[in-house]
Image (cartoon, rainbow, N blue to C red; front, top):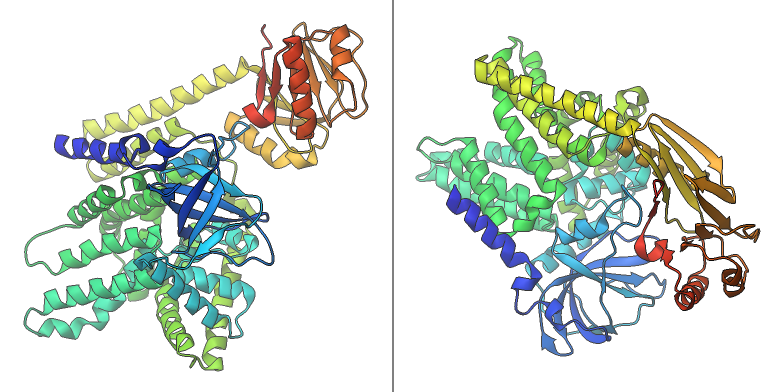
Length: 610
């Protein structure tokens, strides 16, 4: 155990840039440089940029390593890059910014867990694409998958159906509409759209059934296992070798090998070996949500499913098969439930309905999908088969949409933090052990979990009742103040509609009960400290304020204003033009008055007790 921990610390330390002699960070300066970059992955684009994960090859002709984020402004005349493309750019790399407001998605931390610390932004698609790029296995897989998608697009598939087909079989979710993805999420069936353990497991079962005759040959078990593993990795190649499919294929390769051994083994050893092998090569996978959910589901199924089968074994075939499917779904959901609540703060109560209806037919959908892919690739797909497969996917989408529309069973905005996560897993594990063997230790574990949960909730409620806080947030074209007192949040904004989604998230994370919206005024008194807001109305303060907030780029002469008033702090938010902010900052520097800009430093918390 200690050797494994020491090895884990070693591989994690090796992933850190400071421990890599040739990492690009050792060559970074404040000046622009000539970068040679190789595209490693095409990320989902947004409305403004094409986004890629790239590998640094050289800076100013000095060889280096390390991953970066590349954002290129969208231009209708410029072609998109593909995996393995190499480009040359002359620019600077910037540190990826942390979130500017509390409880926003921390993209900086997310990329850091993937070994990405800097970003290259190109406001115009100006770069030199090189022709001497050497192809990699991942690049070939990416191009093959894109070829398959292009062949499918020639047939009369519906737009929503084609997006689901690409996600279901090829693992590409970029073309899924937001409404379709949300339906699968609310129905508890989003795992169907991610090529991972469910898909690879079904494929392995199908292959083992089809290849049963090989077992009659000499060394047939070993030959069958080798063929199954080879075909699984072939599918991983077709699916683009994404991290999720590589993880799942590695796991089921160990399971396929273990299944043909003639000596006693168990699924836990196979799971442990696959986990060790993956983390030895890619240790940062441990911090990725998909990795955690995948192994939590697999481990829960391995532990809980057999116990559920021992709990009840129906006599009738259909009832027995239905109970088996439901048991798998219940076990997987129990395994991932705390993580789902921690990361996504929602839980689909009817997950078992969508899984019970769709999972039995998912194997057929995958098998028929492979036939459709092969025929489409050969330009030999009969129109009637394309129409039939489109009809099946359409019906699956309808079922998922119906389940998702039962909003009373979709529980959203559930407050859940790391402490809740730990106590919930202890409670689930303790309850399972208690049902299996009710002894003093398991009873104690369940009681400790319940007491810990209750005590933590009591502590949170007491702390909440003594909280009073005022925040100035950063939002483009909007001035927003959040005033929390006890379990109530007052939202003061020039545009309250634009801040409603974030206000709900803030309320949920702070576990507040009351949310009110108010129009923004020009003057507030903060425990004997005055806050004056100068906006486009250009209403100037009548007395010296402690805090002066500049909003909506008011046309004022700040130098003259500072001759009459000397606030202890001047603030500017995201509603102002950056050129105005720079001018105001220079004026404050000359007057030796502190200046705070939310665009650079994030949300500001006022000292109400000062």
